[in-house]
Amino acid sequence: MEIELNPPTNRTALICGVSGQDGAYLAKFLLNKGYIVWGTSRDAEGSSFSNLTCLGVLDQVRKISMVPEDFRSVFLAVRKSNPDEIYYLSGLSSVGLSFEQPAETIQSVVLGTLNMLESCRMLDKDVRLYHAGSSECFGDTQGLPANETTPFSPRSPYAVAKSSAYWLVNNYREAYKLYACTGILFNHESPLRPERFVTKKIASTAKRIAAGSNEKLRLGRIDIARDWGWAPEYVEAMWLMLQQSQPLDFVIATGSTYTLEEFVQMAFSAVKLNWREYVQQDVTLFRPTDLAISVADPSKARNLLGWSAKTLLPQVVERMMR
Image (cartoon, rainbow, N blue to C red; front, side):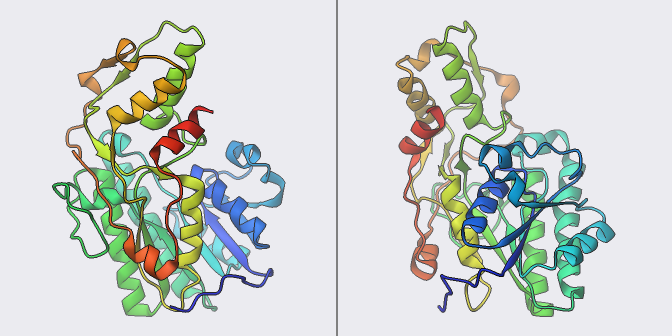
């Protein structure tokens, strides 16, 4: 496929959800390519944008308030920023939290995506839209690698919401000829992950214990297996998807799967501790439904985008601990 690897430096990008892990890394990536970068937050005046500060790009991003569930707010943000590319990363992103807040999750993800698609449709210029999908949509594939043709079988409110948003994007692409595509991303981590994500919880707790804390690390199931990658690499795949001549959906993953127990073992080994002495299983942290194993086939991204993950889980854990 045709791809433009060196875009002109006068391109403008709008990142919806710029304060999150992916949004912050993407902002830095695009700024380094010469883009003008706008970033949205529900309250741009009151948000700390700590991740942008951490990456040293806070002052280079033009901030704008946007409430994804409010169409007028979304349309005004798009019109004001006048972007060539939109990266829609907004919405509640915690699988565990979605069981506690199902209505909020579905409204945030689905209605927000619909409002963005409608805004793009009504814009008087061609714009390219990237939508952040999720491997959770696949559900349990019985250990078989999931690719772009694997049927969805969502098993959480979050996955149901992301599946619905995926089909909305596909529908608008077909019905209105929008350049809109979905990156179906498997797990990807970094030190910018919030504490509610189990990977950050493990890394932070292990470091505190190594520093003298007498706490225990309380976890739910540790036999689950996931494909974990390094978040800064995944934002490049998002950008590559919008440089194609035609909009296509892609699975983005490393292609390697590890258990959560292995993640825990690597984290504690990094601080020279035996994890079995410090980890307790807590049944209250079990989810009503959970995926036993998540396996990915990212060969389409490798073949068409020229993208493949360079950092596998051992290096991911090492960087998060460091």
